Length: 367
Ligand SMILES: *Cc1c(COP(=O)(O)O)cnc(C)c1O
Image (cartoon, rainbow, N blue to C red):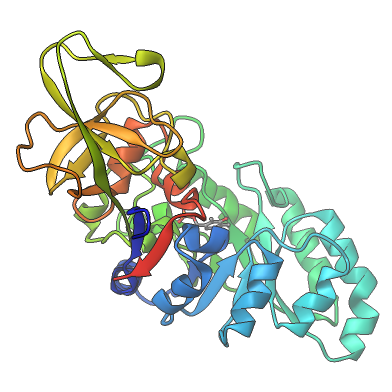
């Protein structure tokens, strides 16, 4: 029998979550964001889960090629853009769209224009504006100039106007509220033709509230498609369903007395008699080593807590109140019945990091 840890990917939940996106952003086209191997769910599975999306977006050129080889015919876009001059030929060969966010990318396009234009190649590009995130993009005052340089090129087809939100998951961020980013975007893009692409999951989830000001022709949700949330409202409140369940089993039980300790560093000490369950799941499976005492876990469907340090291959849980639990009992680390966001919050991180960190040694099934 294989080691009992298993990630179950729920393709139907992905399909359902895509429908939730569509219901919240009527009329917008949807990029399913599948970077980082579909946020850890598997590139090919994400492609099938989001088969009804209008396009797939990611940051890895090799995985974009892989999507074409897997038969994806609709648009594919590179969210971080291309990384060098030679990538333009790959993009042409595989019909990839790309963000354009810096001077260097404009210069590469200009240098390749005569050759690509003559061969009839037309890239659909997404000109990115830096509206305060200060990662990628042209400043609002430089935006129209960059746009004009793209328009002048024979190898450029459609130009979509794009920006990215820093704080759309917070109602009113004191430094950079989402409404301020929208205002800067509208100012920088004033008078320019083209479709607009602003919202990540957090923007999609606030579309109702921002309906008067936030206009998207394309939205770019990632995390919500996988059934988790960028903010603090439980994903289930939006009707989202987890796309990944990480489960394992109890592989050992120890009865301990008051004063006895558990695991490396003897960090946890029992203050009365306890039953400790040992779960075949550790940080080498992608479970966060920093998960502290009290991080939630389900055993036989009953909620209990992590006790002691998470080690490479195992973690230990409190079974004192779960009389039925024994070797072979099912353990859910996150997913159906236990939102990944709750586990992440207990461990001081976000659901994104946990799902992306699912380790290669974990067997994956669909169900
Ligand atoms: C990752 C990414 C997204 C998706 O973000 P979520 O918070 O997962 O919805 C959207 N746009 C860009 C540019 C990204 O890099």
